Amino acid sequence: MSSGTAAVQLAIQGCSIGNGDEILVPSMTYVATFQAIKAAGAEPIACDIDEETCLIDLNDALSKISKRTKAIIPVHYTGGVGNLDELYSFASKYNLRIIEDAAHAFGTKYKGNLIGSIGDIVCFSFDGIKNITSGEGGCIVTSDSTVLENIKNARLLGVEKDSDNRYKNLRSWNFDVSNQGWRYHMSNIMAAIGIQQLKKFNKFADLRKQIATKYDQLLSSNQNIKFLNRDYNNVVPHIYVVRVKGLNDRDGLRRAMNKSGIEIGIHYTPNHFLSFFKSDQTNKLPITEKVYREIISLPIHPDINNGDIKNVISTLENLLPSYTDNAK
Ligand SMILES: *Cc1c(COP(=O)(O)O)cnc(C)c1O
Image 1: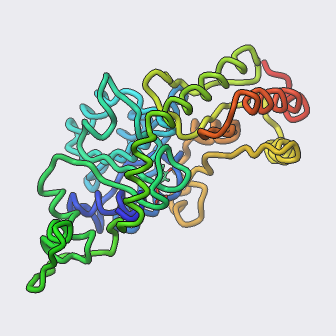
Image 2: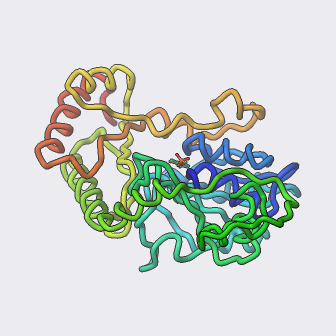
């Protein structure tokens, strides 16, 4: 696919989900997930998260199921996947497709299996900042041959059965089109970058795990810091997010960190706060809103060394007292 966003959009379309249908999705995700649902013609139903895992709260999701609900899109936030067994039994009980937004979770394992090697439909992104990149790109993994056929056609302007031919350097001249299609295939140039990246992936994954583990260790005695529940034996972290208790001026903290040459991030502004998606003003998501006010992301990428890690933590710990109320 040309991007992770295109992957999520076509995964939905591939399941023949679209106009008039609703999809359960955590509000705490990048806007790409929500836009992909809209692009497929469906309606994103913003759900709350579980406070420990920061992944979709199935009790809240349950309360939002309607006759129109056709799918659930769990987002593997930071790389964590939570209890997938529970998620899949929930989906089968309520007859929902699962489209995993695994943009953060390339390399993460669940019970010994790589994410993407199990499950219903799994979408990855190979955007420039992800765990692995092809410059721009994405992919969809599924074992459902009908969905796969739909996606392959839709990826190349709806031209039926053309996608496989092109890989054989052939092309269909007499073809039919019976569905909306897009130009969402990955270019050869991007794929060439992706293939080289794949060879280095184990190294990248180990470095990301080591950096997150080191941050965890260095912050473990800090009373203001609350960690997301992540097991870095199995999770390859795409971002490193912590919650800061008593944080009263996040923008100030961010500017001060920036002055010291350290960029911190905020992943993410919840989607139900965004003008395009806040049609339902009654949909309050208390945990998402609480967690959102506390989150910061520390730098994590394979080029960070031990000195950088220590510098990030000491700078943060020196600044925190000025930007937090006393931790209780
Ligand atoms: C990056 C990302 C996407 C979209 O991927 P692109 O390749 O940038 O289109 C979707 N969902 C999440 C959670 C992401 O972080």
